[in-house]
Length: 401
Image (cartoon, rainbow, N blue to C red; front, side, top):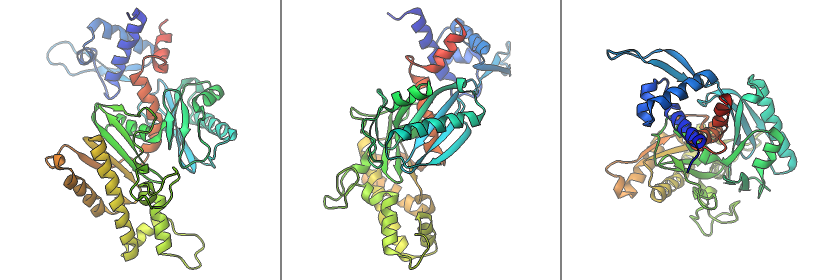
């Protein structure tokens, strides 16, 4: 049987979840939404007021009776640090509780693993907090999103396919020892789909997939509002499904993976081979080839269209494997070719008979910094979903001892 303290923490978490997405609320509204007693809600909100977690902002509209006091969450009550690790560097951001960026810094770095990488990450986190003007004591936790397999429960990086030597690295322990604050590492696509949830791109209990096609190819998968990771932290690795057994070698050790034909690196290599530059000071980059294609270069147009077919294959696999109601696609060049994206979506519907009556929305990511925010969203999800080890509950509870 749960103790009185455990029941209180559970009730507090339910109430916190009820106000996360609301701009304002009243005590009666909170009681109705959570089905907790008015007395429980009254005491909780009063404790939050005293702690500074909520603030009063006038009165709600009256329906004829006494006007209820109106409250809102104080997003500055605590801060979250999010570190989004890529292949060639990382972004450190300090956020408030509504995932609004307070301060951010991008760091180019060679991330081939060695102990100095941990020191660099820790130093940049401390510098970002200092430069943000937020006191270190305000930081509730640090979320770190990484491009590979991460043991979420244990905080160990199992493998980063495209970044050498990140195997079995106890990242959570190493950074917690250095920083003295909770650290939550996870796969980057898991963080990004959580950011999509917390920023309102989907309903609270959605079945959704985030498909990222950048330097690598992968998905974040959500079922009924919860991230799905799998036994070996390998859910969503569709970039390493084979489409050509005699194809190009992949960094995962296989051959002919979707990543070898659909990723940004793959399309850039084909474009550079097909459209060489004689005597150029620097090789063209992906944005240069997008411009060429939009100006009418037939070769560039053909290669982008061929690559789009592989992107469509990744979409089709994700839809059939996970059966989502929402698919969010992240890609650097597809937004410049809306007709190609429309064809991809039409192709998904054509290949899935059960979707022809609707039931699936496919959209391109509308938030440019969604992947960076995803690292902070890992912390917000912990604050909203877990009673044990929850730093927000610990702070609220400590205030009223």
